[in-house]
Amino acid sequence: MTSPIFARNVPGMTERLARAAVGVAGCGGLGSNAAVALVRAGIGRLILADADRVEASNLNRQHFFQRDIGRLKVEALADHLQAIHPAVALDLRAIELTPANAAEVFGDAEILIEAFDRAEAKRWLIESWCRAYPGRPIVVASGLAGLGRTASIAVRSAGRIHFCGDGESDMSAGLCAARVAIVAAMQANVAIELLMGDPMR
Image (tube, rainbow, N blue to C red; front, side, top):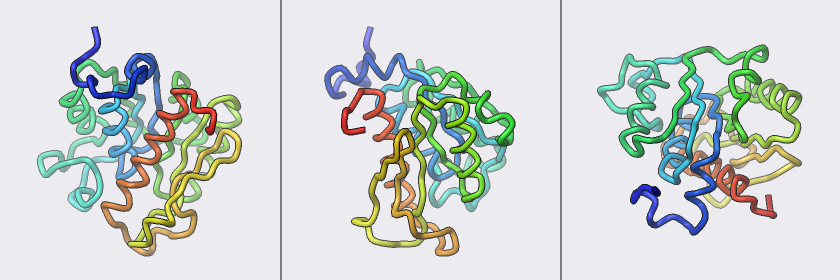
């Protein structure tokens, strides 16, 4: 029986997404917001990995609240996701992701959403994922700091790698909640497009 939560979904979307598993590497500004968007769309299973705990400085852009400060991000986020859709299956990994374990952690995921802060970590995650699962897509965020121009944010694809952002700005410019949320929503939307078999992806 389909939940009434998804009564306004695009036809056919609820059934397909309910069978899907998506990995989210990092549960900060990008990962937490992308996870919320995916659960609201009806994703059946999420694999969430992050070793960090919620800090006050996270609240300007991440899907956490004052009451979450000090908690593991994966556990706090799981509570918020299940408050939206209690039946969503969540696989929580409160571990530090490394080039040695990332592919195994997300082995059940059809698609991986990269939500790291550092360019070096983004690089090795893309490399390890593509080496382990050459047929599975990865959705990456690049260039989302500062204020910037909304019109500069776009999706650029190269094979199974899909880049969301402006591709230029770096973390030194600081972070704006709206801009981070835009890119996180784009990542979630690209994942949904891929799961739905959009030929343009």
